[in-house]
Amino acid sequence: MSRLGTVGILTPDMTDLSSVDLDHLAALARLSLTEDEKRQFATELPQIIAFVDQLQQVSVPEETPTKRVVDLGDLRADEQAEGLTAQQLAALADPAWRDGQVVVPAVFGEADNA
Amino acid sequence: MPDRLNAFLHPHLTPIAGGDGPLSGMSIAIKDNIAVQDWPLTASSKILEGYISPYDATVIQRLKEAGATLNGKTNLDEFAMGSSTETSAFGVTRNPWDTNRVAGGSSGGSAAAVAADLCTVALGSDTGGSIRQPSAFCGVTGLKPTYGAVSRYGLIALAPSFDVIGPLARSAAEVEKVFAVISGRDELDQTTIDYSYEPYKLDLSKLRVGLPTEPWNLSIDSEVKAANQQFVDWLRAKGATIVDVSMPTSPQALNAYYIILPAEASANLARFDGIRYKNRVDGDTLLDRYRQTRALFGSEVKRRILIGTFALSVGHYDAYYQQAVRVQGQIIREFETVFETVDVLVNPTTPTPAFKIGEKADDPVAMYQSDLLTVSANLALVPSLSLPVGFSQNCLPIGGQLTAARGRDNLLLALAKAYQVETDHHTRRPEENDG
Image 1 (tube, chains in turn blue, yellow):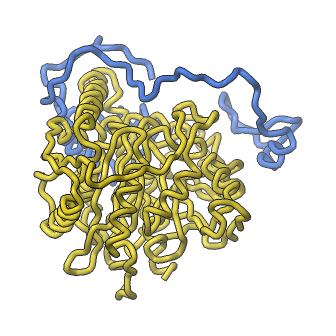
Image 2: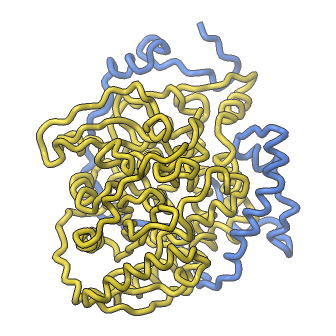
Image 3: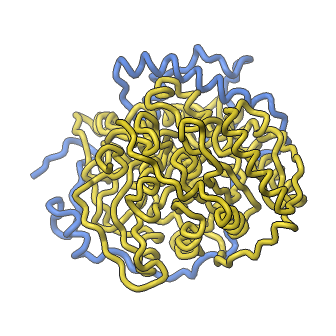
């Protein structure tokens, strides 16, 4: 997820909840929402955001930490480990297996499932 | 009983019989977000309906090598997002103590299965309380291990910086046996730590117990508080030193959690795109296929993906996600400081006993507040255990929570075992209740 930092328009009220743009968020998340869901979320999402918004009142040191849960000091040896064999893969992919390759829907253009 | 509770998914599965080993004879149920080769892996979601796992999670390999019998997959909140198992796409799991009430979540199926004697031990996962809260609601013992003590290889990721797999059983002794087998460094999970289980020699007269002020001051059901106070009295009678400790940032743990978790979940669930995991709904364009396939997610999952997308988006990232991470850092430091003066923190696991099915389903924020007492341990990456400490007037189990410093899972287990030698809350069985 590319982060553009604090560039961009920061409105004086960062938490103007009436401006939660549900359509925009759904588009970013590749979600389609039914009309019922849009109505439901239009109420719920601002409530949830208002709830977590209390975090703004906590004063914490300004330095931006890297989110790191473990120190990756001990990396494993750079050795190839066993993976699936071609036969195993063929069995799993069956029937979407052709010429030693897994058949998936076309990413560009129309898919022809021949 | 099994059908009435809906604790298990995929009832057609034949148990995988175990052999010799330290867990020989133990029947273990597996939460359906943990991969068992050739068994379904659905995360209780329609988007993974029919998907069969091609591999074993590391914990499953270790259970098999230890001789355990795997007897099925248990129900959960969809993608482990929830505190009641009500968001499962395959129906709620009912609490064996009162089938009008929830078993808790997200590991509701696992907790109910143990409480109803449908297995000896169950595996669950805990990201914000999902082992401990259902354990409390169902009257069983559940351990959220130290983050990194148990491999996540083969666990469907929710918030990978919090997720931990852990065991649930009636007794801490059984939890300990399974934890000793599944824990330890795994080359396939770079976030595991060098960990090797050693039982802890507990001397109760030297134990320093901290009662964290802020959790105890929350609005907690009076019976839950009373049962936990009795547990504290037991500790005092055994010679433990009891002190009040303050953790001033802990009230903000829930807010930080409900920013960080959706942010990570929104990234982790991006992989369910109609290309990789069997199920797809075709559309005219690739984008349509993504959108229509992902319409198979339930409402809570969509809600959290949207919140996460919001928290990570331009203009909000710093105020929400970064702020949450800074607050998490402060919580980690507070825990480290408090464990310089005490060995274990004690407080109730949940604000109330099990609530009624449907009671909170329409109020997401009320549902999130079920996690008030459990989330801090996830943010702080420390081990935390829930054990039965009593019952309410209407026979609902009450859980007490023990939390210790990173790596001191053995202390928690030793303390729970000592308590269970002298009490019998953990041995009580639910009677046949009306449905």
